[in-house]
Amino acid sequence: MCTAPLVPPWCRGGTSAWPDPACARTVCPFPSCRPWHARGGLTCAEFPARRASLREILLLLAPSNGSRVSSPHFETDKEPCIPVLFPDGHQEELGWRDVLLRAHLIQDLALPVPPAASAVLRLLVVMAARVSGLDARGQRRMTARQWAARRRELLAHPAGFDPDAVHAYFDAHIWDLFHPARPFLQDPRLASQCPQRAGVNKLVFGRPEGNNLSWLSPHSDSDPQPVPSAQALWHMLVHHYYGAAGQWSVRTVGGRSLNRAKAGPLRSSLSFHPLGRTLYETLLAGMPKPDPSWPDAVDHCPWEEPLPHPDLDDDGDPVEGPDPDAAPPPVSSPGRLLTGRSRHSVLLIPAPDGRQVIDAYLTWATQKKLPALDPYLIHHVHADEPVTRRHRPRRADADRALWRDLDALLLAGDEDDRKGTQAKSGKGRYTVQRPDAFTTLNDLPPDLRAALRVRVYGFDQDGKTTNRTWYTALTPPIWPWTQECDPAAAERIAECRKAAEEIGTHLDRLSQDAWKQTTNSGSPRHLPPWTRSARTLYWPRAEATFWNLLNEPARSARAAFAADAIHALRTATRPAIAQHFRAAEAVATALAQLRQRSR
Image (tube, rainbow, N blue to C red; front, side, top):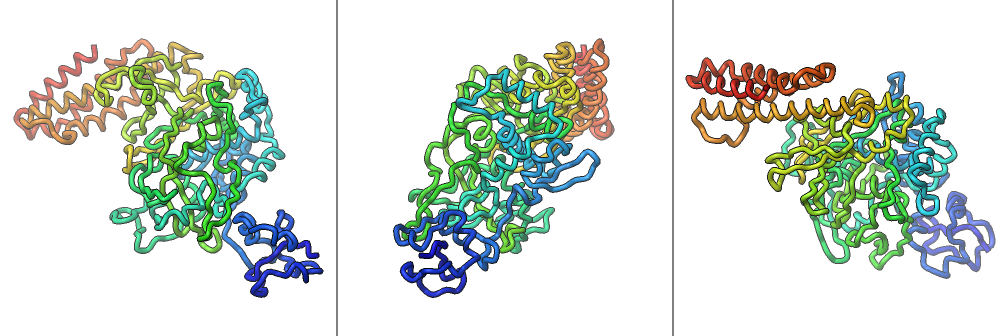
């Protein structure tokens, strides 16, 4: 009896029926399908016993050597899709696998989209934890001391991650962007659950979509242009982490149709990542520490979840799989914490060769909350708020210079600050909590601590749909200034930052009062031109003053920043003094109050 797997007639133009098991006495005449037999396909004798599952049919149709049936594929672990920078200055694009294999030779990531780089770093940290054993759980759980010793041991290894462990990990999972049963970080059920596609312009950030006007982009919905698969991966990750809230494509699950999605877990946030001399050091230095408060549960990333074996219903659609309406698994670290909290679901539609994406489904993934504290965000802890609202991530603001966040990284986390009128609950105090990934940097080798910098990724957005801009920044080596190493330097940095912000707030108020007094007008709906100009002039000067003050510990910070504010207000109002009769008196009053603030 034939021991080769059954082959449907459309594979090789066979007859209109399956081969008759009773007559099959020789090897199956379709050698191109033998690789499927090696994967565990059904034989002629086994087929009549049960109906084939969707997975078996998909495996049957999967491409193999010599097969005429082909499907697009883009294996992200092998295809060049992650730009990286090497110490000699040249850049390459590598797959996930090669990024880890060559992490000790790579200087940094080189993705041109900062929120995508923030997401890629989180994925790479989890992959590094898997291949290094620093994610041990259950019976293999390590104490904090054992975990720190294991990390120091890895950092002392100049050859990087174990290649055998890297290959074993990537060989165990599916990384294909267009795999029929498990597309990477996507849900194949959207093809049957969503009646409409969102369009490739909706997928790619920066392109106008729908009825939006095309101001600075050549793209339009009337002629959507494909996007390379590697770039589609970047933008898909941005949707998973920074996706908008509000109306998306309709998705029908269990007879219930919804088109509302929650905001992504990192929306409008500012990420801080320890940056080593190589990507290998960056991944190990930024790895979250083990925390006994996390549930000791199976910690699966989305690509590590067991592959479902759905059967087909009468319409040919899969009926099994994770229920989006069900309560999600508890957040665990590092897998689900860093990769498993997406609120959005994506399905990319590839070109026939798999090198481009021509369309996409975009909709909601879950309506449930997945509360957790991301280890790369600064949190403001409001002790008087309910537990669910107590921790608030510091928001990204393109108008706020990054040096103003420096003290939040250096102080141990017991410093109070005032939120002022911007707090929803009114004036109050909060505690600044440094990113959790920074709490274990004391355990790093001294030479690495001395060279450690911080990479900052920000995406200035509102809480729902508006995307303003994204940006990135890099600090100098800051570890010698931390409170653990130099308490006086950390306190001086905090003192200077607070003085700069206090004088800046005072400058805003005085310039607005002077404008209203000069023009005899009420409170304007927008910032007056004097305030905008003074603010634009003040903060760059304040940054230079801030760095100079660190080298002059005896100099008064308030007096130095007040001098900058006086110069900014004088420059901003100089043309108006010659134009408005009452301007000179109003400006003089404002300058006098600024001088009083300098004492």
